[in-house]
Image 1 (cartoon, rainbow over the protein chains, first blue to last red):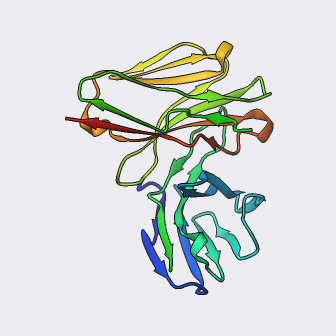
Image 2 (cartoon, each protein chain N blue to C red):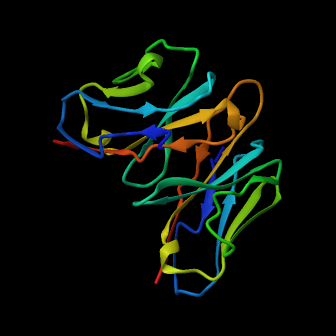
Length: 115
Length: 116
């Protein structure tokens, strides 16, 4: 399996622009997570889905952030409008449910810079 | 309060030295999982180990070993005979039964620099 695939790897955008980050989870995984990593706050969970349904979005910082999972193989995280404080590395992760607990596998991340 | 504390922000060692990365966690659950992830300079997060709360056996995998002690709520990670390729940020994480094991709570990470 190719693992969790995120695109783009790097994104530089101007303040006020819309940014869309994309994620393809590992096939067969029914949990998908979006995390944000910053120097100040470390790795924070933004939102997660189970079977394409958002379960907990309490980590989403504000209404400018939205996430969707239209099908089992694709998810997006959108920021509109973007602000410089949104600059961070955004990780997508997926894991499978089943008997016992399975670890989450992470994508390579998208480094977002908002200028 | 932090659920996962990695008190060491940065550690520098010389190649072949042994190094231990500390992790202290806090949970009210009796059932939980603990993890270590490695983040090399390339940026990806690499899973290293998972341990459930009922299994306090220490684990060894090559040069890596883990010491889980429920009495002190610690899950420490030791690298024996460190190598330059071990240079990375290492994260300890917790997943609790009360959250349905759905999410990972990460510590702030320890940056390990191994010099030749």
